[in-house]
Image 1 (spheres, rainbow, N blue to C red):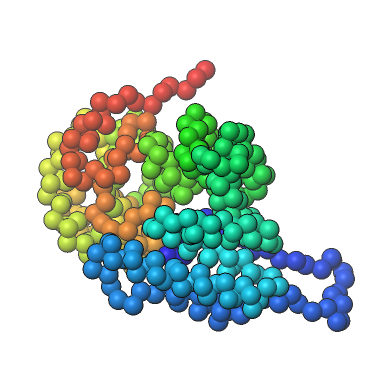
Image 2: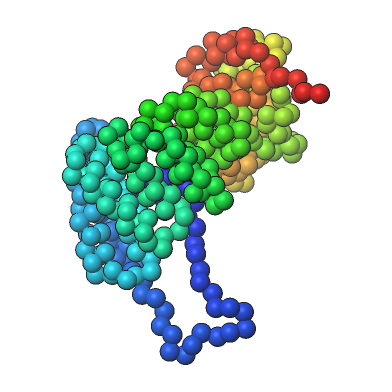
Length: 360
C-alpha cells in the first residue's frame, strides 16, 4: 500500500560539514527512529487473511490503519527529537486519509489535519511536505473553510510554494484536486492545461491527466525484434496505432491472436498499425521471434526482456495482460481499454482529425 501511496519519488536530504573541516570530536549525531520501529509500523498493514469482498477488505484495512495510527503516536512520543520523524508521520497521514475516505468521520478528519500540520512543521523533505501542505490547504479552501471565499488565491499560493522545487508537478496535481474540492472549475481547467503542456511526460502526471479525461501522448522508445528502434508517437504519427501488451506465456493473449490477425488484415491499409510489446522474460528473444514467425503475426513487435519490469509497461501501469491500447492519429492515447471493442475503437479513432500541421 505504502509503496504506491502517492506515486512520487522520495528525496533523501543530507547535511554535510563544509569542505576541509571535520566535525567536532564531541559532536553527536542526531537521534533517529530505529529501523525496527518502522518495520513494526509497516507490519500493521498485513491483513490477517484474504478478504472475501471489497467491503470486507475496507473493513479489515480500516482496522489495520487505526492500529498504525495508534502505534505511530507512541513512536512519536518515544522519539520526539528524531531527525527522521517524518517517516512515521507520512505513514500516519496516509492512514488517517484512508480512514477519512472510508469512514467519513469528523474525528478522523481532525486527526488527519493535526498530523499534516506536524509534518509540515517538521524537517521533512519537500516530497512529504507538499502532501502535508495539501491537507492543510484543503481544510482552508473547502466549503466553510477559513479561506473558502479566496479559494483560488489560496490554491495559487499553494502551488507557488513549490514552483522552484522538484515537486512542481506534484503541487499542480494537488492543486487540481483542491479546485475540485473548492468548486473552482475554471482554475482546475487552467492547471490541467499547464500539466498537459509542461509535465505530461511524467508517468504519474500522465495517469492523472488520463483520469481527468485529458488526451496525452503515448510516449515510448521501443526495440523491435529485428533490432530496429521505434519511437512513439513520432515514427507512426498520422496513423492509428494499436498497442498490445502481451506475452507468449499468457493464455488469454494467445487466445486473442486469431482475432488480432483477422482485424489487422482488415485495417492495415486504412492507416492503422499494430505494435506488440512483449512482456516475455530476459533471454527469450529468440523464443518470441520464433513464435511470431510461426503464428504469422506480421505487425511490429517490440521486446525488452524486462518481463513485468518492461519500461513501457511500468510507465503505463500495466499489471495484467493482454492490455490493448489505441493511439490516435495525433499520437495521443485514444483508449487504454480497447480490447472489448477493438474494431469499433479503431474506427472511431480513424474518424478523428489527424495531427495539426506545424505553425510557420
